[in-house]
Image 1 (cartoon, helix red, strand yellow):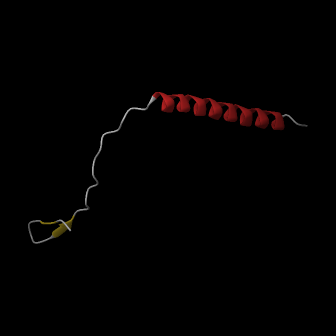
Image 2 (cartoon, rainbow, N blue to C red):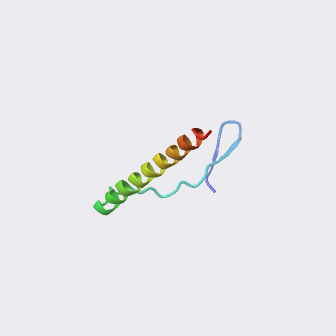
Image 3 (cartoon, rainbow, N blue to C red):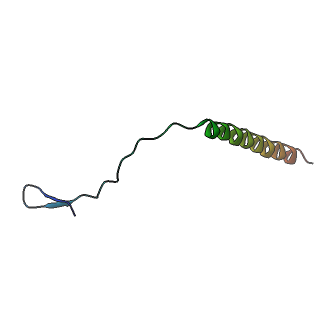
Length: 59
């Protein structure tokens, strides 16, 4: 464990830092999947709003 000693004799214990890496840009297939999932999510939200609207007007 990496310890450092401060003035006055106090010890500080620091966590081991994870290995860093650079992110890669999304591929064309991943971009297409993002668009498809976004469209499906929008349809789902619109459907839930439509059901809620229809249910609130029931008398």
